[in-house]
Image 1: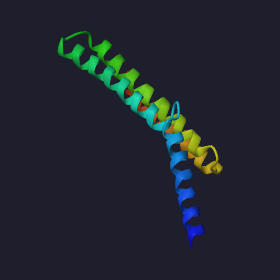
Image 2: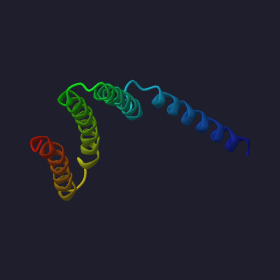
Image 3: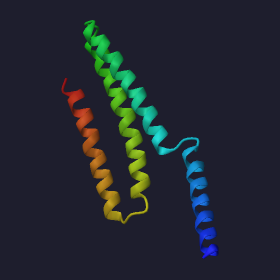
Length: 112
């Protein structure tokens, strides 16, 4: 009985210490996501202020597109890490979805 208590307490200590190590990692997924959202929010805020001041609409659209491109690149990278170990069908689906997203960004810009 006492031996099982020692085992439980030592296993809980090791799991808590391993979780504290992972939360203090240098660049985890959560930290990257947070800073990306912050940077893109700043870009969108600048474009909002510029559009309110009636500054050239091309500058506003350019800032919004930069923010969108940053988010698409990071999400595409993380999605590739997920799909990389999957069967070929998943990889083909990944590239088809990526092409649809890129077309959805580029075609409206060309039609302006």
